[in-house]
Image (cartoon, rainbow, N blue to C red; front, side, top):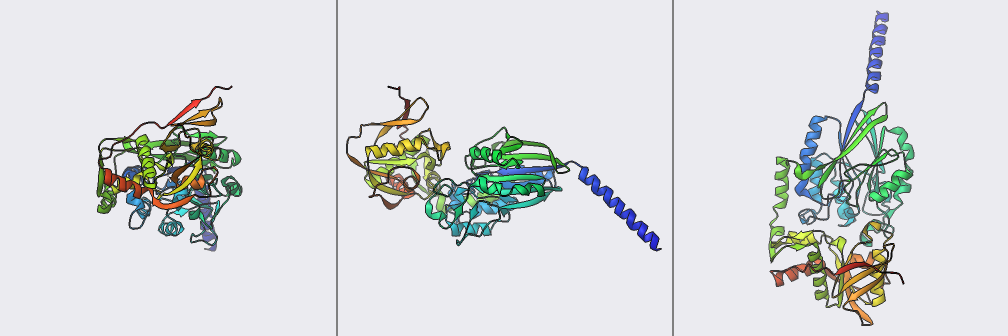
Amino acid sequence: MYRNVISGLKITLFVAIILFVSACAKERKVVIISTNDIHAAIERVPQLATVVERCRQANPDEVILVDAGDRWTGNPFVDLANEPGAPIIDLMNDLDYDVATVGNHEFDMGQERLEERIDGMDFDLVVANMETGDTPLRQPRPYVIREVNGVKLGFIGLVTNFINGHPDGEDEVFEGLSFSSPYEAAERYRTLRDSVDVLVAVTHIGDDADSILATRMPELDLIVGGHTHTIIDRPRIYGKTMVTQTGKSLRYAGITTLTVKKGKILAMDNQLIALDTVTPSVPYSLKVTEILNNPRLIEGIGRADSLFNKTAVANLMTDCIREATESDLAFYHIGGVRVDSIPAGKISIANLFSIEPFRSEITTMTLSVPEIKELIINKFNDSINPKESHRPDIYPSGVSYTILTDATGEAVDVEFDPVLRKERYRVAMADYMYNTYRFTKPTDAKNKGLLVTDILKEHIEESSPIRPDAGQRIRIETTSAD
């Protein structure tokens, strides 16, 4: 009897070993659905929901959903909700996101508000290069390991750090936080590769920085990136590391399919799904419609008599700022103009905050012509944030200008029309420009406490219907060498 029991145990153990060996030898598939820079584009969540549902139906237990940061700032129905930011987090929870990192715009509403949103997340938040110290923010984990279909995946989170020692944004929202180099932070977790089958970096550092990361840390198999709003429709490979990114505002979803056997990746493929081509999920459409049905935000404040293109929107903003502050000149950065157009017809509060969702305030000062040139040239030649360099950036009011470049494309001078002849000029600009752009800061600079959105609202209400001025106020010309 005793021998039979022992024999039975041996047989059971032998079968278990065979099944285990067989399972280890089996090819296993993992599907990573990725998003980045959603910027509260909840109108496309129903299409994303359809993609997620189809993937999960076709690949039960093989799908993991990942986001690379900047989940809000860009849609007033999210940013100005009763609980700002909550609608997009609720939708992500409904979609069963698994892992995410932070982007720079996660901090826009302040640390207390961000902590509230983190508390409401049903998914893991990972950031390896941020220390929260004695702030309202909890310390996020640097990485998380998830097992999907028998495959162990490690996810390391990283965020930008190159402006004033913190990600893009106003200094005060980062007070008390410290950010280390994303490259050095990632390298601290090289040995994580020994504990997982697939090592992934979920980053909000930009595709140019992702390429550096891939080179410095070849242990990474995949980088799910964000921040630069780059549409990488063909995967970029550095060594054996694949870099992906899906643009912005949920125009695309990324689908990365991995085939793994005995802890080794046999194949890895990435493609983008254009969400505008996908039939929206009815249940999620109803959820989004409920969020968008906010009477306070759809109230009309005026009308546009015809379409404003992006240049016309930038001109409108700078003209309004100059008029409201009674300045000689006004400047606004193109990155702060968050819409490509204003359609003809009714303009609502929601439209207004879509144009400028950052709650930017205006700083006034007096500048000499050389100091104005310094501001424009330094931004055009920007080596700290090269993705924003060598393009029209600082939109003016009260003057037009031509940037003169040398044979290498670097700005060397600026010509103004009309010619600026006064010794000093009263200048108004967004506080973000004053705080982060490199130029000689005058001692008389003063934050007026005027919100750009309030300035725009007053103008639209008083001047409706407003008419577009799409005239180009910036030119770039190559100057011949003497």
